[in-house]
Image 1: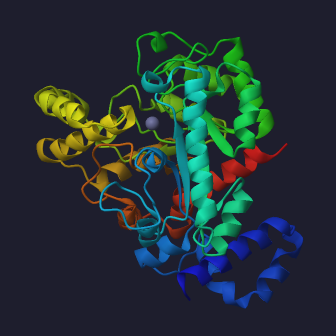
Image 2 (image 1 turned 90 degrees about the vertical axis):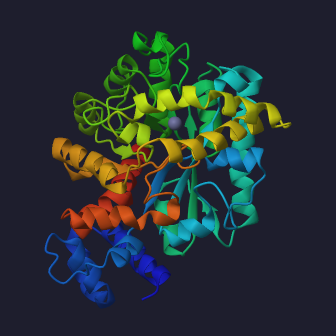
Length: 424
Ligand SMILES: [Zn+2]
């Protein structure tokens, strides 16, 4: 069966399982004899399932919860439907890597666009419009997904699903009604803060965030997200804010791109207690691919390298004649090159160590993927772009994960959370 045909079959099996009560499911399954292999392999008995990593990888619905490719689309006017010579993600390499659904990060960098106000809102709106018009222009390849059912249907049709999440709540401009504004524009998750604290949510990236949780307005934002069916993302928020979120949200809470502090001890990662609390909400931790948050000691080494290359970074910034966004891209280009030369290599094995750790703590139902592609200045050597995604599945298989487990990690767990959060 072709890749697409398999996806169609898979989508129809899911649809059948969801829409029919279990009373009728046996009858329904026996009608779909062509699905016999899938149905068998999805049970715990995997006797006749394939062990070919690529087959398993391509048959699964894979969802990446976070990529910053959006800013490239806005600032560099890139067409991500062709193979790009640089960067980490485009539609061609998505298909090669068997990635089916991408959450495009709508990221407002507050130092450049403000902690709120018109500048922050415009920056968010520009990115949302860029995703929406890309999808419209390439409707043969893409479709905008607003729900888990959309993802299953779009993937079943052999297309790529595009979704959006707000990174940092700056664009809501401290107004509750703006949460619904962005929901209506298609945004399906939001975090309270990126590396700079908002008045209502603390960040793991600044001093004030260490003591700042959610204030009353922040709690009302979480409740509004729960009401609308927008997922609550804790990646980047501070520890006090994390705890206030899990204690306020009545729906599963997710970390779209965070790893384990027990392995790489940085404030951006989650402690074991946090992972347990997040799992208790029914949520998912999506591991990210950045070595700084994967490899113990990498962050300290990076600080030294940053000092070493500061002049070169500044030179690239000054030589770039374009706007502030292009200057940032010029600086990051130097970092990408120098980090690869000067910092220790990390591999997919380390990424899977984080997955293992989460599974040991809270089980297989609470882990997913959030690459942060195009937002990171280094990657594991065997995961340098989305085309390398099957290497994750290979490593999971090598460590004894079943096909059913892999389905959950690649996307099944996030589909479950989306369905839960969508319930009114
Ligand atoms: Zn981020």
